[in-house]
Image 1 (cartoon, helix red, strand yellow):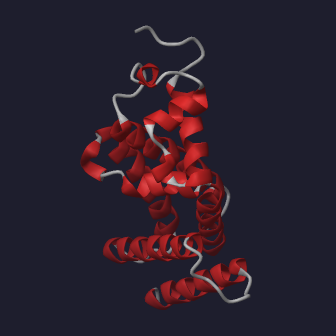
Image 2 (cartoon, helix red, strand yellow; image 1 turned 45 degrees about the vertical axis):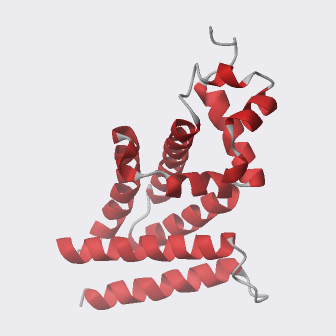
Image 3 (cartoon, helix red, strand yellow; image 1 turned 90 degrees about the vertical axis):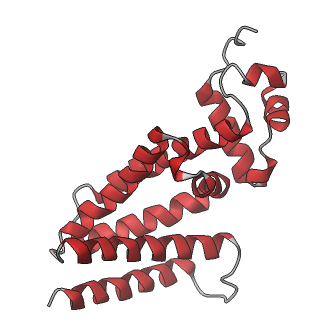
Length: 189
């Protein structure tokens, strides 16, 4: 079967992302995607070889977007300002793309070499920012893990509606990042 004109991987990924962000990742099936795109399911196989491959492609798509946004957040900023912008950018990305974020987290790292490289770029961006604190190689890696844990934890708790108190979430995020940065500075005495 020849590909339908106008249907390409980017269009499929944008549509799958919209479905996931609106209805959750489980709502993304080849049948639902085909119906939304107004094509027959077999038409999708010209671009993706099944649902599992589609979800890996979604993860790549999501990490590329996140990487671009993180890199932009870090440009022209250093240390605390860069960490705050990275944190806000990360959480904002998850708020905007909850279903896509879920696809990113579910994709097995070893499933695809390209995906692994794209995922590693996120870590490299954070690592570059954290290197400015001159903590030493091992301590910097621990600091990167810590920041990633805070951001993922915060974003995931928020995404699952776990912050029930009537407090502003952005203030909670800022305070968490400030506490993290105070700890980083204590390491570098």
